[in-house]
Image 1 (cartoon, helix red, strand yellow):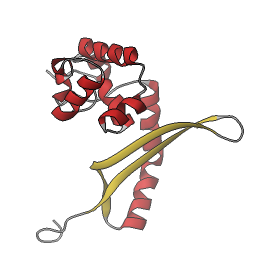
Image 2 (cartoon, one colour; image 1 turned 180 degrees about the vertical axis):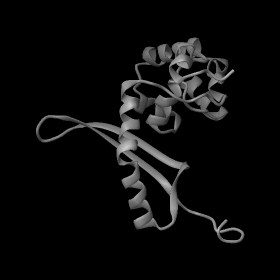
Image 3 (cartoon, rainbow, N blue to C red; image 1 turned 60 degrees about the horizontal axis):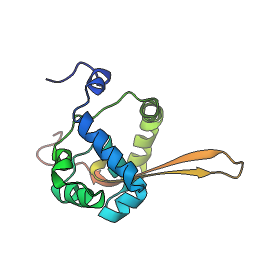
Image 4 (tube, rainbow, N blue to C red; image 1 turned 135 degrees about the vertical axis):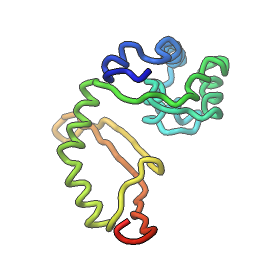
Length: 159
């Protein structure tokens, strides 16, 4: 059954016990997401998202993760299911706000520079860093790297 809202879903988070055990194993390992991601050959942001139950993890990476955290493969196998995605966390709310505010401008620039095209969310990379600027303020740097996909012109126009 699909939940009524993301907040309702998150109070009954699918695989919450398994995710808690996975996070505990990561804490016990002493590895950061970046170190663990390097060890198994994936992106740190994607891996952290998987630890929140927000990613489908191919079987080969479930096995590598189990090995890196000294778990049995059965303890990471649940990550191989496609999750329901969503959240109402304040950081995620702000990311939605950024896209709502700047999305139309981003779209215009993509069309201006890339033509009649969209950004892929499948052939896609993502990275996040926290840095300090010259004034001593911490800054969040988010990089989206999606393949530019021209719209197909199949059939008779307008299609």
